[in-house]
Length: 117
Ligand SMILES: CO[C@H](O)CCc1ccc(O)cc1
Image (cartoon, rainbow, N blue to C red; front, side, top):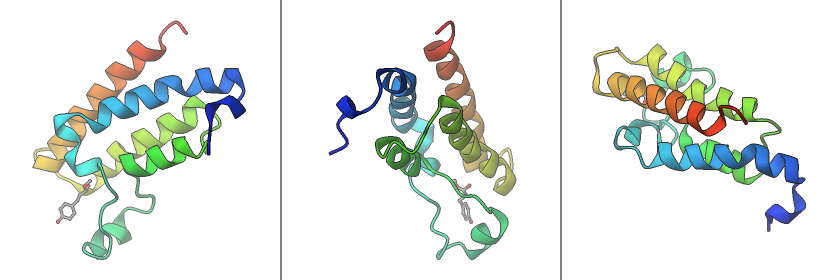
């Protein structure tokens, strides 16, 4: 099992805000387009346009498998979700609006969790 005992204290402390903000994102009302990977078999256009797909479930797997060596790597994957969303969706579409709302929620929550630490 991936017990936290085996992770250096520093790394474990580093990544605690990542788990917290991921939980907050997953439970947000506007997270619905981002919970799971876009079905690229159902939407072949998406696969052609978006070269680096990302979603909250994938981030959760990477976090649980200790694939993030720094907070910055985690933040980059979260921001990739919102950047992909802006690339593929009109700003005033339902998915586009959800992306803008969730990005603002993330940046605000992340700043609260990590400021002065
Ligand atoms: C996170 O959702 C994606 O940005 C857009 C998903 C989508 C795919 C095909 C469509 O026709 C509409 C939306």
